[in-house]
Amino acid sequence: MPNAERVSLEDVQRVAELAHLELEPDEASHMRRDLNAILDYVAQLTELDTANVAPMAQVSEVLAAAGEAPPVESQVLRADEVRPCLDRDKVMASAPETDSVYFKVPKVIER
Amino acid sequence: MTTTLAPLSIDSIRSSLVARESTAADIAEDCLARIARDDDRIHAYLSVDRDYALAQAAKIDALAASGQPLPKLAGVPIGIKDVLTLEGFPATAGSKILEGYCPPYTATAVRRLAEAGAVFPGKLNCDEFAMGSSNENSAYGPVHNPHALDRVPGGSSGGSAAAVAAGMAVASLGTDTGGSIRQPASFCGVVGVLPTYGRVSRYGLIAFASSLDRIGPFATNVRDAATVLGVIAGHDRMDATSSPLPVPDYAAEIDKGVAGMKLGVPAEYFAEGLDPEVRSAIEDGIERLRAAGAEIRKISLPHTRYAIPTYYVIATAEASSNLARFDGVRYGFRAPQSDTLAAMYRRTRDLGFGAEVKRRILLGTYVLSHGYYDAFYRKAQQVRRLLTDDFLAAFREVDAIVTPTAPTPAFKIGEKSDDPVAMYLADIYTVTASLAGICGLSVPCGASRDGLPIGMQILGRHFDEATIFRVGQALETLQKD
Image (cartoon, rainbow over all chains, first blue to last red; front, side, top):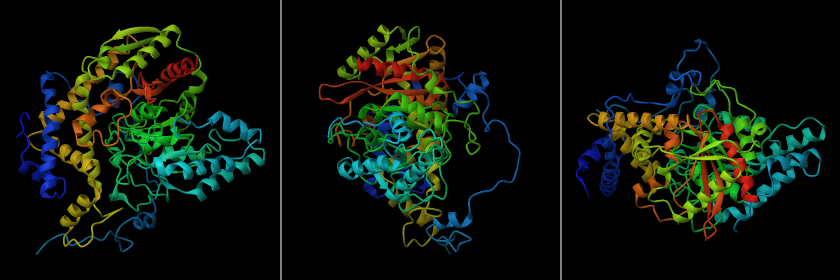
């Protein structure tokens, strides 16, 4: 396998921690193998010279800049008006644990 | 069960209701009976609500009885992919982490269908959070291809494609982030539409990759697909990326044919890796379009080979951010017996997410993390622009582009499930349009010797769905000759 050390087991554990994922030891080594295979494949992007290419986050910006489509609301601010939102009781009904006003969670700070 | 297609179309339902030859209740009952009879083998539906569907049908029948005009989709059974919300119904997104969740609001596209008189038999199976190309990543079990039960229906909208192919819905909604409507449409022998980014509101779609996610219809024919898109399309203040452009009357243009139209055939989509039977079916379809008066031009989309790596960086980066919201606090599943908040997050996500979702979250977190952002994420965003520029240049020369939808017909269940890169290559012809935000369509175009459907992908300019519907309608008509 080319460049098999691109992602180490420690890297996998560090990224899992950032993503709030808990991985079993065999799961972590499986993920390490897969991430290396995928990133080896992704590495072909380095063949391209993109020094003078502006990053593109999504298409609306490209179309608006080219005058090919009108801007969308994410590009122009709308009036700041109070509007109705979802009913609190309905929202709280979907949660695993609430006191009907707040979401309840296990303790945040360990002593 | 082989190639039984639904005998019903939107037009035939409408005329039978108007002539009072059948009722919406009859049509709904027939659809529910097919689900009861066949879905044990196909597993397209995750939930079916008979009472709700019959109540919707009863409203249509009351309208018809009082002689009032019927709305556009009156009495049409339409299945909904389970990543879209319908207030009070389960929305699992194919994941254990949303088991038991019933969202308190309805997606705009779903609401517009309901307002147009559609009847909802239920919610459709899909890959977990729409991540997959085979529907094998559903936490609730795979969907089987109605044309060959040992094969995948494609993914991620596998249930949406299979339900329509098996006549268990007349149309359905799916979502497409990298090919998740077009590829299953190809595998199941139905029509599937990728609308232009911004054409259909994403409000109420459980997000996977927000700059790529789109909602679109499946149907047995191009005209029905165009009708459903016409209903769900258009600006919505609940989605700030939805376009203010007016939605044309697609049906008015659809029969104009392809005479004089310039169709591009990109060399890169007919290279190594294309199954010979798919190649010959698509070349045959292109010949028919030429014979019908289209001008066929060879074109090049030179950055095509970089599309899959670009897609898997951008889509996973956005997914890692979007899926942070599933933490056991506000909805769905929470792992029991955790002492601290941090432990509860980790246990909930470990038990709630499947392997492919974790793989993508880890990859996305990695490419966004300190030291790798420029090398991977920024690089991919730059290549995304190059891929988009390829299309903008091509569309100065041609009116639409025709390609295979997928490199092979439907593969066997289990065939690729251990090799993520091989699975990702199933989307090699579809991810480019996803990254560029253009519209596309998959239309049935022949079959393999084994009788497996093959689809032609027709790609169009931004917001020019009308042209690809014309090409698709022409191809569909030419297939019947």
